[in-house]
Length: 218
Image (tube, rainbow, N blue to C red; front, side):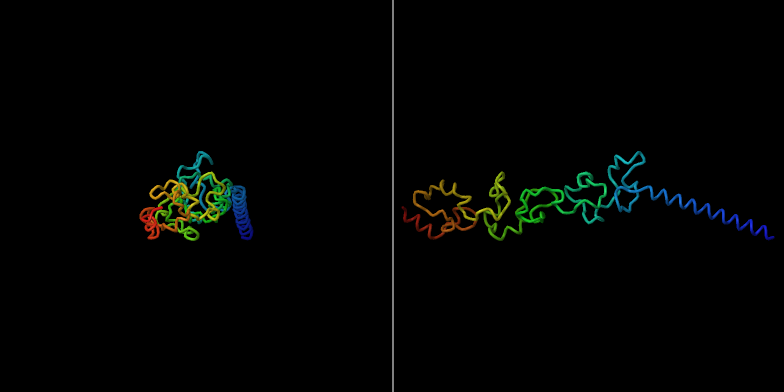
C-alpha cells in the first residue's frame, strides 16, 4: 500500500512541476512580447493585421476619445504618425502648440480656440471674444475680414497690441479720396471720430457738427 501512495504522490509532483514549467514559459514569452506603444490596453489586432505590423488597418478599432483628445473636424483626417512621431502614443502632446507653429509668436496667448476651430484655420469674427478690449468690433468693423487690418507679411501680423487703434492708421486713403466734402482742401481733422461714429458706413454716421460745416462751406 505504501509504495502505491509514494508512486501517486510522485506522479502528482511531476505533473505539478510540468504545469509550473509551462506557466513559466508562457510568462517568459509574454515578457519578451513587449509592446512598443507603452501602456496600451487593447488587443494588437485592433490596429494590426495578420499580414504584418504594417500597414495597419484602414480603420483601426480604437476609441481616441478615451485618451482625452477626441478626433474632431480636420483632426479625424490626419494620419496617426503625423501626430505620433514616437511609437509611445502617450508621449504626443494635446495642446495646439505641440503640433502647430504659432504665427502669432505667442502674442495672442496659447488658447487657439478663442479664434479658431478644428474645422480649419479660418477665423469667424464671432469667435474672437478677446477682441473687445482695445478695439471693440462694432458696426462696419464687425464685418471686416481679419486680414484687412492684420496685414500678411508684416512683423507679428496678429500681435493685436502692436496695431494702432487710430482711425487714420487704416483710413488715410479714405480721408484723402473724400471729395464731398473735400477733407484735405477743407482741413478736416484726421481724427475721424470728430465727425463720424463707429456705425455702418461713412455717410450714415455724419455728426451734427459735420452737417453744419458742410452747409457753411469752406
